[in-house]
Image (cartoon, rainbow, N blue to C red; front, side):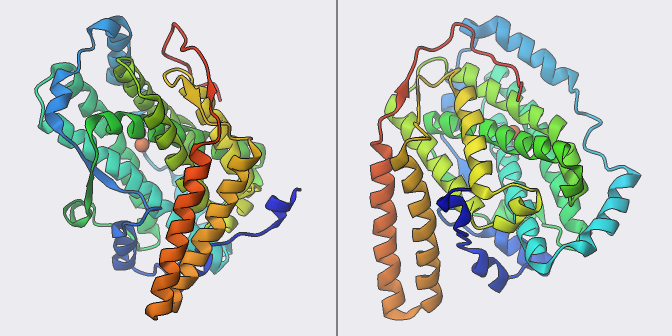
Length: 366
Ligand SMILES: [Fe+2]
Ligand SMILES: [Fe+2]
């Protein structure tokens, strides 16, 4: 175990415990929060989607539509009798701290799933391009199932989130369509990598599976993989290297800081947040070679040091926030500037370049 791993960096952990989620209202309030680290809802310039032409990839596109139509997960998101049994048996064994981290995991996962559902639905409603409309219908269908399934597990704790209210009340962030492709492609692929890494770990160590929802992750993550494939085809029209670097780094760094605020969750699965995250980065980077001609050097010492520094800065920022007053505000500003400087240095760590493959689509083999 190296020094970084041994060093317990539980940043917002104190914060999670101070702002416990104990009611549906608390859960909804957590989902509504918009910080640099929390999952967001997006809106975009819809009319641009009408201009997407999938003719150059027609054969692959049609094959993918057949897969969506076949809907091999239509019966997957239903809970069996064993599910309730396991919840009743396992949940009382969780410590209050782990329970809070798990609830936070359910809420942030639900918010990301629902974010996709809303975005895909809005795109569908606001365009006339039949190919893209059809794709958006299928993807919204999948994400709505995913969000609903997570919400059922929150309801077991009496913490169900009012999705209609969340849709109306949460702030929407505007992204240009081009950035939506990058960000969505990445979040689908990283979503796949996160779910499959947890599934494989608990497949090896079933005694550490402290909630039945993890048994659903294998077939679930194939939906996310396919969603990513759809954007891979759309993005074939050309990508911008600098923006890709920016988005990959932003998505990876956010995930790293966020996951290090839930150390007990990973520990309970027999993982460490650092190992888990680097495994997810490794899988995601491999997949992204299908469309991105550059990838981050995730093992570069400066990159690794930067990630850990961001975790520390986030913790210091939390403490400054808790302190309040003028000095607290001043310190928050200082830490935000440090985070920006760290991010900028990480951005300029040399990337690895490669030729794009002839064949775009890849199989979910992880
Ligand atoms: Fe999903
Ligand atoms: Fe998805």
